[in-house]
Length: 148
Image 1: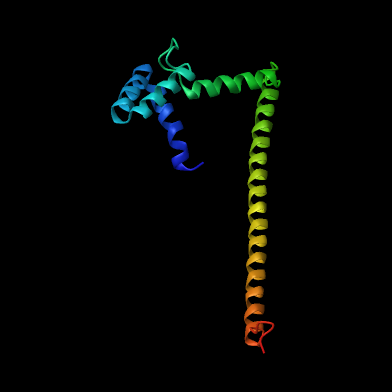
Image 2: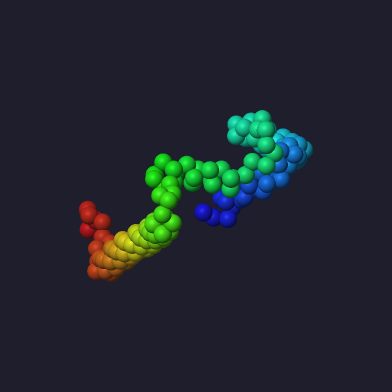
């Protein structure tokens, strides 16, 4: 994700860390600077339930942690009681995640090389067509039919 595309998420996390007052201040500032911006922030606060939440410090990190814990619970990552097995299981899952990321990176490089090969072939075909066209023009193929 580019830096520009990631900015709203970072700004939201920053405001979440500072609490509900920061969101209210951002909304007021948004109305002062450009009223549609303030309206957008207010709508976002209402839609995301930040305005009516009881806690001031809703954090994206806490939400991510809660989702990860729920995923582990649903997919059998509960403690077996055997610490050696749990450590082995955690290491194996981490290794598999790293391998999956490496494989996805490999697929990305493969797609890039395929795209580059296709683009190079396209450029070669265009150059060949341009050469053929210039050879045809030089060979007297410029004459239009019906003139004589």
